[in-house]
Image (cartoon, rainbow, N blue to C red):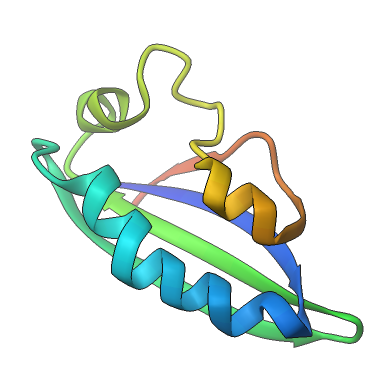
Length: 100
C-alpha cells in the first residue's frame, strides 16, 4: 500500500470553505473511477496565522498512484478552486510505502 501525502495552508477565513470544497466537490471528482484508490484522510491543524491541511491518499500500488496523478506522479494535483483558497501549498507530494 502507498500513502500519498500533500500539505496546503489557508487563512482562518478560508479554512472551512476549503474543507467543504475538498470533501464535497474535489475528492469525489478526482478519485471517481481510479482503480486501486482506497481512501483519503484530511487532517486539519491551526498554525498561528494559518490553517494547515494535510491530505493522505491511500492507494494499493504505485501503479494506482500513477493512474490517479499521471506520469509526473510526484507533482501535486491541485485544482484551480483549491488554489484560490490556499495561502500556499506544496508543489510536490511525498509517497511512502506503508510498512505497518
